[in-house]
Figure 1 (tube, rainbow, N blue to C red):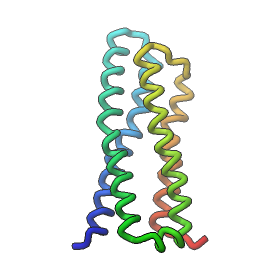
Figure 2: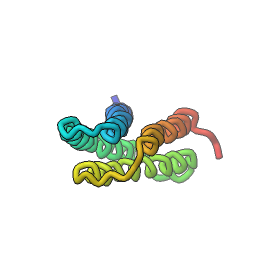
Figure 3: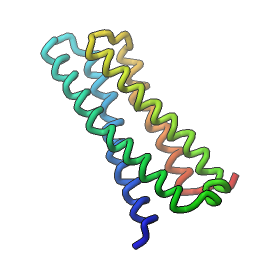
Figure 4: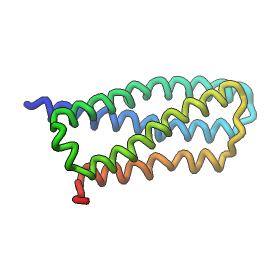
Amino acid sequence: MSALLIYKALHIFFMVAWFAGIFYLPRLFIYHTMTEEKACSAMLKIMERRLLYFVTPFAVLTAVFGVLTIVEYGSEWFKYNLWLHYKLVFVIILYIYHAYCFKLLADFKHDRNIRSTRFYRFFNEFPVFLLLPIILLAVLKPFF
């Protein structure tokens, strides 16, 4: 079994685990904006923090095994596969999204949230629109 296949498998595994959390966290934010009960808000703060800190290592490991996969393929492969460059643009946007979740988490923690439920509903769907082109580019590997 080659290192490349192990890196790819681990990259996919950690990506799936990361996305499970990234899909659920904004849903918690939606519930948080809808509650006025202090006990419920306190519970949601704990759940949000635990979830974000739980999935962040998966985000890091997704990147680590993605980079190891690229390194294993080699610099020439990276240089001439433009689909990967486009995929990485979407991936970078996803990491920015993930980082922004920490800002939103801090806002909820300090009861400073100014965003509406509607904002969080859109925010909740955003990773889906990043995941689709990421997967399409990785699987189809278009020539452009």
